[in-house]
Length: 154
Image (cartoon, one colour):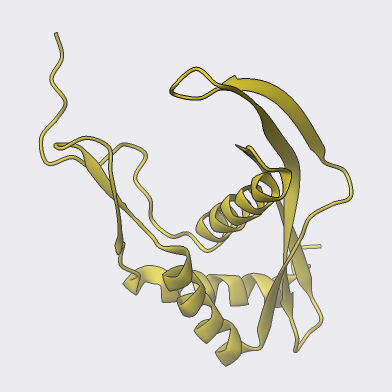
């Protein structure tokens, strides 16, 4: 039991070590004085793909047949009512070692909303993929917002 899936775990560790050089190139501004940097999805993918090619690993994503798409009423900034679609699911990522055939599955709950159901689905899939990659391959994210100046309190 101890050596179960040992080869794929070793390869995941190898991928985790390769992301140490990753830089946060995205910048989200919250206010004039508050912003945070983040790992952009395409930068993450290029690092992971390069290493996966090198060590013969493939990563795939699957959205299960079970999901929830719930319309709700919303009001825009000028008071106009519209439907907002809330999409909820669990996204699965499979990491497979093509040399040994071993694989591991990781699951991430994901949700998003939009005026259009297909956009809500796309957002949920994108966020789910991003956070699965961040968590499994250990891209370093801080829990708190990175600020040049702390917010003022009353």
